[in-house]
Image (cartoon, rainbow, N blue to C red; front, side, top):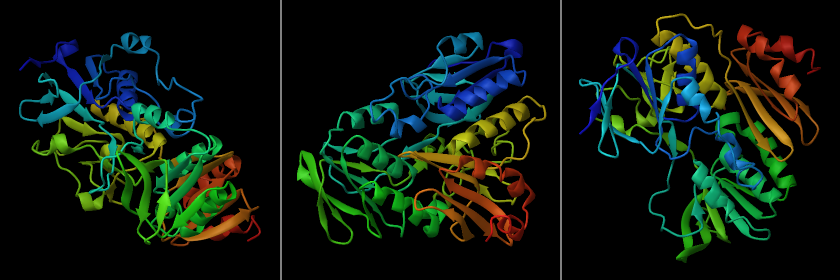
Length: 407
């Protein structure tokens, strides 16, 4: 087994495992923070780092092919060694070595885990053509090849990916059935009241939205032709997409000694508020990382903006500096049809929701927790959402923001 050690400035080498957004941003921020040693970015896929949000939208619709996050010359210019098609299979923290799927291994002085997520599967389903998940660029291209006007698609799971795919399919001329065990689309993220407003949007666009039901079986021989739902009904479908969430990629860490979060609590790699894990030379960032938050909890945050914010904090901590980042306010968005759904803060299904604007398509909702503004969710009202950031940071009393809205 070929084991490589650091030979850069001072013999230091930082290895980032995972060439998605979080891994790339970490490498970029390390250089920005002044790290000048060896820097290796390992990617499990054969593609250079790319942007995932367009996969469920422009890519599957055939409107965009290049989703690269950086031009090829970026890596040479920043002294980042990019190794693609190199998934990690094991970590030896005593030897400070990562074993790769091709039988080689690479040594490190500091390791950053940024391995992200893989789609959750439904056990017991037959292997049939026409059944898809969506996580990678290859997944998106395979799904795009199935798009044809007049075909019927069954989307299982009305989370962000499921809702975005349903919108893309309708725009591409497909008939769509969207099923979700929760009482409304996105109910587990935005709560049932606001989730129902998102569901209304899809119904208005011609999607057959079925809530309170899930998938129990697939029909077909060789290729899918339909499905059996948990309410006992059967539906015909030319293709099926399963979007029931994702799980963190941590199997390769099982015997490493690096502390992992319990699967029941969402899983992931446990880390402090700077990304340090239970091993002083190992760090974690992005979707796979369960960071400690200001309330003392440790949880993962699966949002695009979070990856960049964490990368900056981690990079400056790793080099021994102080991060210039201010207080983070979680932010995520989802493009569906001609509407951008945005969430600022951390909405919880248990929050009290105040819908302060609703014209039948666009809406704005304030979330109240312990008498204060905790989050804002809007659809088609970008300016109204983003101007509430300072109020969320200050945790202003909900009455102070409701009164101007006339509620």
